[in-house]
Image (cartoon, rainbow over the protein chains, first blue to last red):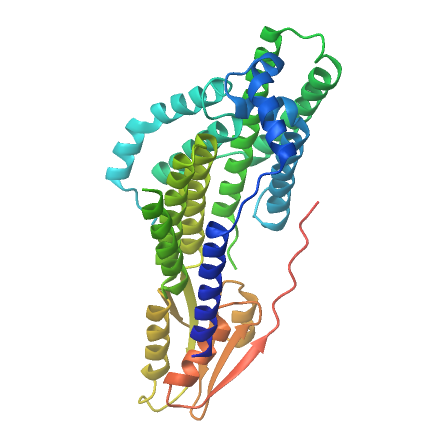
Length: 89
Length: 128
Length: 176
């Protein structure tokens, strides 16, 4: 019974957080809007991409992409290490 | 779960090639339309999962895929560092476009290898 | 349209935590992921929508379902040395009720082997040995079904049952 009460409490907390997040005040920093304006006007000449997302994540933010793929590689290595399997290692 | 479902086999067998073509399309047009290496690689990994669900074959060399993934990661890092940090001011627009296509392709192959290895490890995982 | 999708996301998230059956939770989480992919599409982020639809809705759901089927079989070794035939089926009926409740697949093996021989075999969940006076239940401490089974049997079974914890065998080191 206490398990149901705990789950209901967590549920109410999550719903409240969700509505706080949706209804909360969002203010945009002026530097962020400047950066967005720069990216929107210059990405085609800087990167040669028509899709601005690809231009950003393969040219302006390459470090993010490289370490993100490194995270996937490390997780694959960890899964191979922790899952025992008869036969190969 | 060990018997083959004929409905699944016929449906997925006909959808097989289209999923591969769709994944390659998403990778190749990553710099023009929404999509990119990660999304296309995940779609290509789902092809392997369909292959398992259809045939229940356990003949897949995951060691080869792991080694391929490591080699491709090294190639990715070297390519990105050379082209972005050293040659970026001198490169022309078409060179940058080729760079985007090659990077998307490498990331796609790497992600599909990684997700396939993860899935097959969970399949063969010695339970208990 | 956005509010419809957001409210349905909340509903499916609540349903995913509140259901008792684990398989329904996986399906509800998949539907939640698909709805969040639609929400990303409505907020004009098609890249994230594609990634969410492929990863969250397809790959994660399939991996969870495969892991469910991996952990579904529940293997019971049953050794019976009692002379009176009355209370034979009682504990097996209780375990059948437990596996139905947890949506597992029961695999009962009646054996005449010794306890040590069964313990040597690694593929077991629970070992039941029934004598004239007592019922002994053995299980590994690392097995995560065993604790919930003890609670269930204490609630439902009429007889007194002795539970024993067995430390798991040392895993053989076959790493390079």
